Length: 482
Ligand code: GDP
Image 1 (cartoon, rainbow, N blue to C red):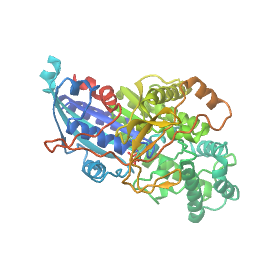
Image 2 (cartoon, rainbow, N blue to C red):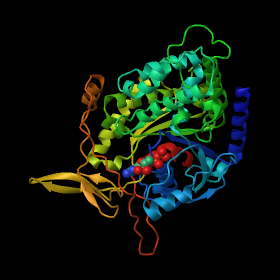
Image 3 (cartoon, rainbow, N blue to C red):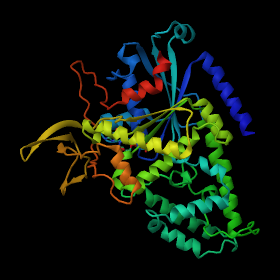
Image 4 (cartoon, rainbow, N blue to C red):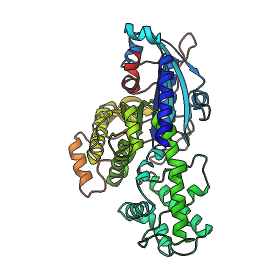
């Protein structure tokens, strides 16, 4: 059974942990939230002695050495750290984003401050970083639903404001089909395609929605085109069981196999074995898109946190929450803002997380919230305008970026005024809870190139600049390096 398999894995992990202290860190977030950039920056800073004043082990000089080692799980693709750093530091272009699960093992040797740890582990920690799409995590609620409930939930979400226009082609097609008609592959494919198109449209920048299950429709991993993904919800299902051989019966079967061959094994083999979890969110993108996007981010976070909540009645969540003792929610890309706004971003993210937890009455794992830029692509400056000093950020826009009509070629620096975040989260959330579409003044998000890493006189490359990455590391790893 699943329980037995998980219990066995957990026991095996515990046993190897005795010989070899290991911390399995999950890194997740919806696509483009910044997972690849975060892992690359974290590893690079540890390998190359980055500036990490808030990471105590580094700051007090107790980090002796860090190096990569072959990962323990042979069946999981390796996180391509070398390719990502070559692109980011060598070519100054952003690395390829996460498309599926991957793993990397980093060994950290440190001088233990406590005699106990010195004696037992000799000051050596294996950090196993597991990178996976947040879309897959958002599939957990599906395990508690049957096909009829799934169809009902998907249809009512699709009809909600902020979505119904995008969902219209799928809803119309689905309405024209009798669920009891004979099953045929062509209709199943067409419905799955229209449903996927609708989900994809919800992801675009001006909508920036987050809750878009089933997760593999947008992030198929290696399952693209397989029958387990060739289904769609059917709105307006008649009561009663699906007649044999009907389209409804076929969809139902595929939904059930999606749960049993895709969702469950993923949780069982990967998520239940994590010790700590960081969840990256692009809060600024949601804020720019308006209240629907902010509310949807909140909904997605409720689903994420419910994975880590004990006593949810789901045996998988019970196992996950038993093991994961710390969760960090990090609002990424804070380098798009002037530093005065970093605390404001953090305050807004914290409030979104509080509201998301309140929705589900979550408690359990220790949860913290942070605003961060794993890689800082900008510098700060002030500009004079009409006799006034204005805070600006300076960076090199990506080739092809257009600012006020001006086209950039990727070689030229420019200063922009990023815009301010609301000072008071209360007024921001009042706007979210009212009907206004725009809840805050727009933040000017320019896609900058990764920073130029200067060389020291001895020819050594300086490490990647960041904002508050060291705080994230302290929260996630600090106690294990004490
Ligand atoms: P993933 O899909 O979660 O793996 O997302 P990535 O790590 O690939 O990040 C997606 C994009 O977001 C990158 O290509 C960058 O343009 C941007 N990005 C991510 N992290 C940062 C950051 O710390 N600073 C800046 N300026 N941009 C970032």
